[in-house]
Length: 159
Image (cartoon, rainbow, N blue to C red; front, side, top):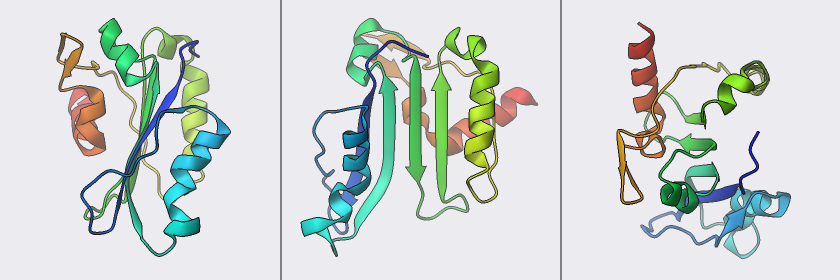
């Protein structure tokens, strides 16, 4: 769907620590997907109980999107919640016209992905990436809103 280089950014902590675990720069490939999913869950780190908070996938990466002062072509965020009725959420954002040109394939893929999960709920809608962009920074960017805020916004916009 995009020719842009895709990057991964994962936010994980060790239990009792407030410092994000380092993963280094990760482009989208099998090795790096295994890295963020497994690095601190095996080997010398067994028993340290990492806390997975979220992982983001950006195309182009966050720096390139900010420099271009536009939304990424594709953004996905997998979030985990400790104290919520919703234990995890997957947000997928695809820039126009990429979304409209591929809507049927995207909706089919989301439905198939949801079939793998217990009690999935899907929300589709249009949201601006950010309220504004200035000096390579986003104001209230989609990547900062999180699933619970987005669901409220999508439900309101469809009412």
